[in-house]
Length: 428
Image: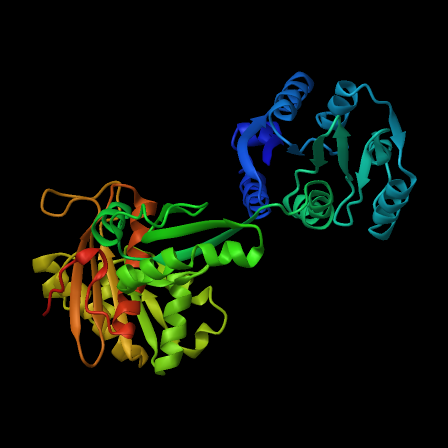
């Protein structure tokens, strides 16, 4: 079963709004056993809307269309669909009553344009929208199906989950179930993981089982897809591949789950071990502390930290030796080591980590090019620093440094000897 997605809106094309709807719907439809074969992003133009719908309906079983259902002059979708299918507009009384009550409860004047929210093509089935004022619409055109929904993400998601999903089940049944399992790794590159760790996987990639490598800052997410006539059958189909990946790449795997983060795992390990953590950040500018405190309950193990961006703060607040900064520079092993130890001691933490580097795009030299990063680590049993060479992009460097530092802590808490990206431990 094939599906296509049409996202409508000038704001998507000029970059004012990121098209998160298409990716969400793609994942939703894939999980429901559909092959999403194409995604259109088009302007609020009646001709383009008509052409895109005709093309998509000719090549797919169902088309999902979002955007252009608002009350203003630039919202063209309902008009385009009505003209395309030669339908007249009618006022849906239930929608009108809901919209009027919606505005009344918020003490907002009800204008003529708002009245138009309740107008729908006469042959559509209304998908009632309890999350907003624009209803969704369902069309059956000669055995091809079209769902038209608002572009507001939470409204679209409500309609997909509560209105469209039952329609999919009613019309298409559940002939094929698709299951996706996500295994997250950290501190390893895509090619190294694929070629050097996992190797040839052809014996697993058959009978509907597939594997995708999804690189991210600091690691790679592996998406395992399986199919089956039942949900449990689809889940079981990827078990041999998942077991093999866990066996081969165990030291790099932080866990499973699409939304799992290394900061979440580090928090779980710190709670389990009864240890606490403090951070001293220069080039990451507080990003590590932010990642840690994004996790609910992090106060149980996170003591706090310093954003020691200037040399004076490193010296006066973290007691880094001024002579070492003068001799070796702020971006150096010596400074990273002192920052990590001193922040832990000053804040009474069991573990201290630090970052100092040249994030870029300026500030590098021949000896220390942009992307040169030092990460320090200290606890009562070991004290070392690692040196990384990342990119020329400032934001990427901050993200990779953050996740590398957290992954370093994770590996130590798990008793894994290797260092992220196979970097070398350098001791005082």
